[in-house]
Amino acid sequence: MFDEIICYIRKLMGKEIGVVPLHEPIFPENEKKYLLDCIDSTFVSSVGKYVDRFENMVAEYSNAKYAIATVNGTVALHVALLLSGIQRDDEVITQALTFVATANAIAYTGAKPVFIDVDKETLGLSPDKLDRFLSEKTKQANGYCVNKYTGKKIKACIPMHTFGHPCRIDEIKDICDARNIILIEDASESLGSFYKGKHTGTFGSFGVFSFNGNKIITTGGGGIIVTDDKTLAQRAKHITTTSKCSHKWEYVHDQIAYNYRLPNLNAALGCAQMENLTNFLEIKRGLAKKYGHFFSDKKIAFVKEPENTTSNYWLNAILLENIAERDRFLEATNESGVMTRPAWRLLNRLEMYKKCQTDDLETSKWLEDRIVNLPSSVIINDKKN
Image 1 (spheres, rainbow, N blue to C red):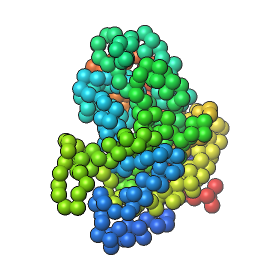
Image 2: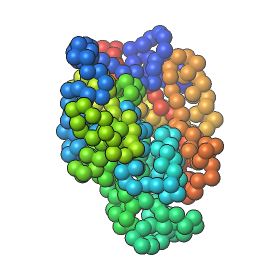
Image 3: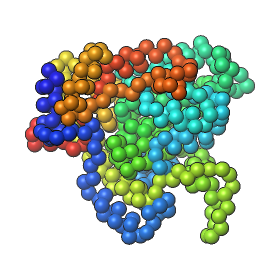
Image 4: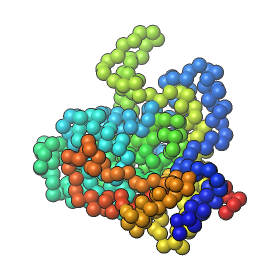
């Protein structure tokens, strides 16, 4: 059966020979034009018209009031945590089934992650498990949610919209609001995804997107922070540009800050990519539909968008019977030149996070043993299907 799947993927992606990438970028229209224009302007660093335009395009698309572009999604998360007042010895809840950057950004502040289980249907943080953990393991004291076992303040929660599928973010927000926990959305993988008609990343105090080379649109490397709070947006822009005070020639900085701004050259690429986002989304949903139909005949579970959502289907995924079948499939596909990958190793199993508190992570462990991502590029040869 694996051979049949490999042949189908090659035909679907229009690559009968050679390597089939997991998710390669496509540059169909104005990318070269805007890059050359940026080069000709000589404004290739953090100042230039494309940075402002890219921020405006993302803000308008997501219906966020403000957007601040950064060099990658990880630093965007770091800034969101800093502006949320996260400090050394605080705790931040997130999920163990996520890319390591989610926990790393927490660690950069000196805080410690607490890992809570995910839902099988969404692959994202489970509001039921979150509410159970907070009800059993925490108390309210002096306006803060305090971990009864560590005595530390739980100040923030970072759910992640896994593979672009929105989690039950409205329920998570209600739980966090009731306990004075700041909600920061790791929407790195979910540009173009909506929950109950509202774009991911716009439910919390901050949302963060990534534009790495393997994302649905790319700036080469890049990220962005979105927020509806004008003051927070101004502070985000300030500390991502070394906190330099505005002046025509003097260099005055009013606090220790970061050189985290997205270069104009990368933003030029992003502007051209944003112009094609709607088309990319349409192609990816078509691809997901074909995968879903194919695997229904093979009795292999295909991960579909959850109820009440519109997913960007960034990375398509299937669920195999067990870890042994998963590993056989990974070996067969990758040996044949068709790139597939498992889900991330659960973060609490990584050396630097082994001592972090978790709940039972029952569903996370079940998914870790079964998830495989399939080639999901927007480059599709429809003439052969």
